[in-house]
Length: 225
Length: 220
Image 1: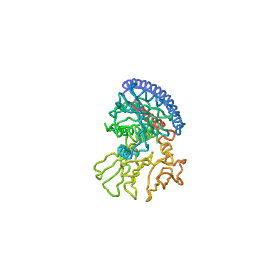
Image 2 (image 1 turned 90 degrees about the vertical axis):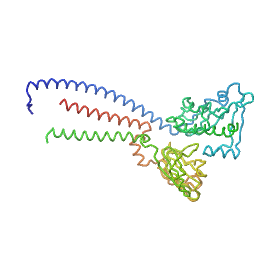
Image 3 (image 1 turned 60 degrees about the horizontal axis):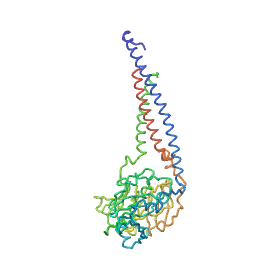
Image 4 (image 1 turned 90 degrees about the horizontal axis):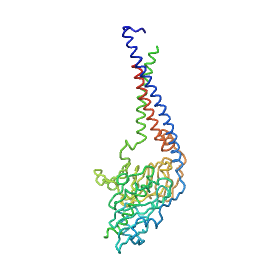
């Protein structure tokens, strides 16, 4: 179709059109570059995620891997001050105690007894520690819980971890969250205790185990004083 | 029909398809992360057969209980709080016996009206094996029938032994296969993010394509 515009104006339009064309060309070149790097990045990410997904699939039934971080002796040494005498006591639950603990936990208590380590200073109890186990995803996690004479958590340490996934629960960033918690705290995941993505089962097990220790110690020793 | 007409048709269909794709991509990404949009809605509800003002309800975040016909709700306190509760059943013989089913986890039960709870072991690990627990039914002699995504299992003795005649954990239901292929879980959990990234890339392509078309139209 022929243009009906004035030839002089046509000339002006032609200039602005060529300018716009150049701008479009530059924009297109830039976009091409962006898409080139975008695609390269995309391919790398795709490959990395593919490998990660494959490794996660392979871990559905992981091999039994026992990682001992602390023995009983080293764990007790690390939670009790040096000047305290450590006294071991195996407490068998009476029916009335079992009933009270179960009512507070809202869960059946399978263990018939509990081993409590008391830290004594001049004959006075300064704290308690319990070494306990809770099933994570497939295998038990062994950990120590140190509680003050007032029933507040002072320290939690993972002693033995038996699965290749979820080892993040032994990091202080996670364990520090339990400090100063007592039997009165509900210890709900994602409310009181932040969950770890990819280690949910281990987080649940540790949290439940710690809550159980707090309630048992409170019921057997702390409430009485 | 001339070239310009075809170009117009192409543009109209191109833009409408692009908008359709934008809707699909955004909703697809949101559906891949349902926790972000679903909230804590009630999944199941059960009335105590003897006192109908006592109600239990199951939510994504746990098990809740109301003593006053649903006016006030409290979470049922327990050591291992259930998640994604999909079914709650009272025993037909004794309404103090309550059974609760988790979607990807366990059957938990209480024999004393919900004060103390315990779990029933299943012959498989639902979460790792991708077996969805759907419904539970309790018989007059406390028999348990459990419906899963891979068939159903039956126990006469409170879960000590399970009859697995109508259950096959090796088979993948077609619906689940299609669903996991659609959301990326088929290739592994990380692939959900790959799918999200692809959707985002497609979204950028659509938007940049539209911008380029608009600029080209102005220049041309």
